[in-house]
Length: 131
Image (cartoon, rainbow, N blue to C red; front, side, top):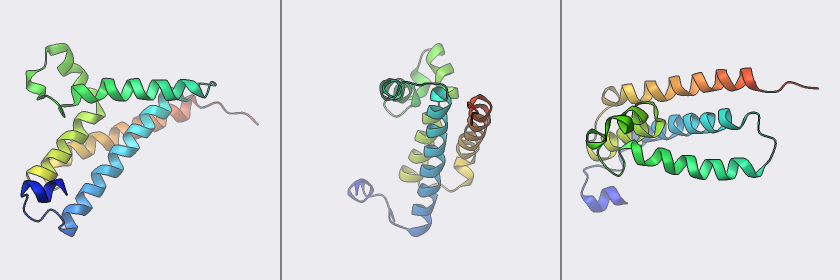
C-alpha cells in the first residue's frame, strides 16, 4: 500500500511481487540460519528470546535502513559489510523504489544465499548428536 500511496508505477505487477518474494525468502533463511547458529548449543529456552531482540536491534541500525551507509564511521561500515540486513535492505530498496531487475540485486541475493549456506554448514557441524 505504501508503494501505491508513494506513486510507484505498477507496484502490484506479478513479476515484481515474485522478485520481492524471492528476497523475502532468502532474507528469512539467512536470518533464521544465523539465529540458529548462535543458539545451536543453548539449553535455556529464555536465552534465545533475549538474544534475538538485542541482535535484531543491533544489526538493523548498520544496515542502511535508517541512515545511509556511506555516512557511517569506518568501524560501522565494516559491520555493515557482513550484516545480512544490509543486503536485504539494499535489495528491497532497489525493487520497491527503483523497480530494478534481478541483475541489479544479484550481489545481494548471492550474499544472502552464501551466508545461509555457510551458517547451515556451521550449525550442522556444531549440532549435538545423541540418541
